[in-house]
Image (cartoon, rainbow, N blue to C red; front, side, top):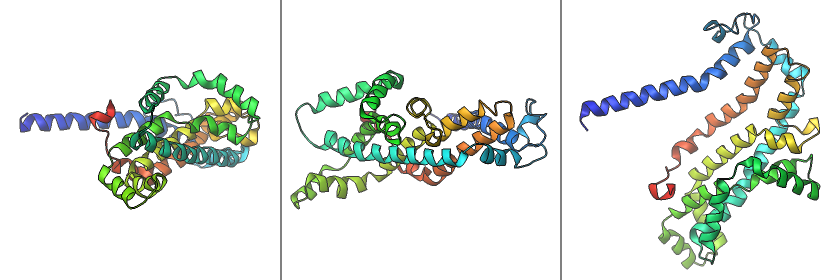
Length: 279
C-alpha cells in the first residue's frame, strides 16, 4: 500500500468515526436541548430543536420533585453495583479454572458455556421467574440481581485474559508454595486488572440500563430502578409532558456518562483479543 493510499484509508476511517459519533450523540443532544428549553415550541423543528430556547432548569426540578427520582437512582446504584460485584466474584475463579487448571470435562464445560451465549435472554424469563417464586425472591433486590450474576460472557472474557498470562510466572508462585487460590488472587488478578476493569464497566452499564427483568420481578415502587421507575411514571401521570420526560432521560444517563468518563482508561488499557481468542 502506498503512502497516499494509507492516508486515504486513514481519512476514510476518521470520517466514518465522526459520522458514527454524530449519529450516536444526536438523540442525547436533542433530549438535552428540549429539557433545558422554557419555550418548547421549537422541539420538533430542525435544526432549531437542537438548540435550547429560554434556558431554564424547571423541567429537571420537576422530575426530582414530582417522581421519587432519588429513590430510583439509589435502587439503580444498588442493583448495578451488586450485580457487578457478583459477576466479578463468579467470573474470576471460573475463568481461572477454565484457563489454568486441568480437569476432566473442561472443554465440554467451556463449550456449554459458549452455547449459552447464543441464547436470547428472553428465553430465560419464565424459568428465572419460577425459580424466584420458589425461593421467595420476587420483589427483592436479590431476585433482580441473581439471574444476571451468572454471566457467561464474563467468564469467557476473563478466561481469555488468564490464558495469556506467562506460565512461568504462575509456576514460580506454585514452586514457592502458593496454593491455587493464592496464585489466582495474588498473581493472576493483578496482572489482568485492565480486562477485569473493562468487564466491571461493561457489566455496570448493562445492569444500569436493564429494564425487562427488573420490570418483571419487582413490584414495589420503592424498589424500582431508574429505567423502570421513570418509564412507569412518565408514561402514566406525566405522559403529556415531553420536556419532563426528556429531563428524566438526561438525568438517568448522566451518572453512566460520568462513570464511563472516569473509567475509560480501563478500556484503553485492556489488551485487544488476539485472533486465537476470537475463535
